[in-house]
Length: 160
Image (cartoon, rainbow, N blue to C red):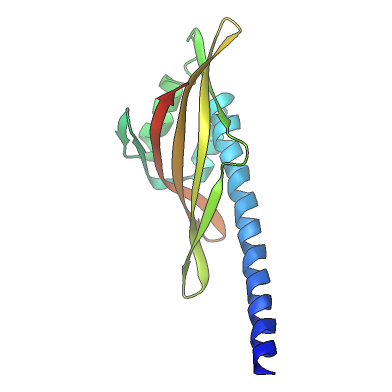
């Protein structure tokens, strides 16, 4: 009888945790879309201001470290989203590549690590050319029921 009770309660705990995981996964995947599809690809940079932590840090394996939210947003304005640039880079998430790992303290979720793979492209005069593929790790923290991107590591850039 004890074994059945254990399995019953273990099963309930597992399904609650899986549901919580699913909600976090969906939220972070949606945030990924806001950061990349809207901010990076369409240059709607207001999403960066809403989603990035004030003490944001970005580590890139070939471009170095960007250690502030303000500098990162300015770099986006002056680079990827520069209005008079002849070439526009874009990013596409590799479907199915996102993994999410919950971070908990005393059983309560306080953050998550999101890993994935993305491809970059460059479009010049309507001609889209493959650029690099890379892996990424995003550290998201939950503050006052809102997710903020605190750390980014972009690594293993390979030309396609």
